[in-house]
Length: 257
Image (cartoon, rainbow, N blue to C red; front, side, top):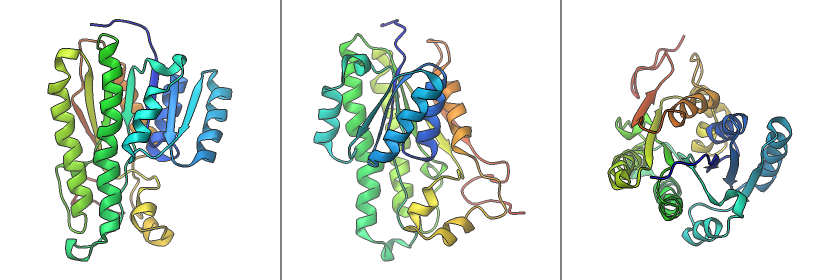
């Protein structure tokens, strides 16, 4: 079992929301952070901000996690400073559309399945290989959702994709057990990020209605939870955390005030 002091983290989907908040929390904790996403200007701005504020090294990588060849090329060509990834945060994901299954847009389905499931698997496979080549050890955090066990109306494909993340997290825990690689799934409820704006294809009014009368979770709330999970002693694995706003009991019951 590897026992070193590497503090290199890779965060997918770091251009906004949970991913951006996690990158900031990791940088503040002294990690060198690889931030990934598809919006180059946001990555560049975040790199500048974090390096100035926390005096750490940040590597922005602009690529599409849905493309397996890009994932493989990026991980295989990391500079030495960032090659020994000790923490992988699989945050990249989205909900697209909000219709009954028979009304759904198959382009939305492809976007969710390719990002939430296949992209997660592509990047995890490559990072795991590198961790194992170095003798094992490391920590993988998958951002799931309460939708991963609680399907709801008009969310069929998104819920299915997060059910897959839930199953993958449990399977990874088993597959990586002998390699001493820890696996944690974080399953949030309502978090106010760009999630609803993306789901409703840029309709700001409709997206805003989701959070009316509720104090939702923030990206920072999730980032603090992740930092707590990865900061546990090596013999402790936090298998999963379900975290919801006080006004939300589950995917079905929300009290709006």
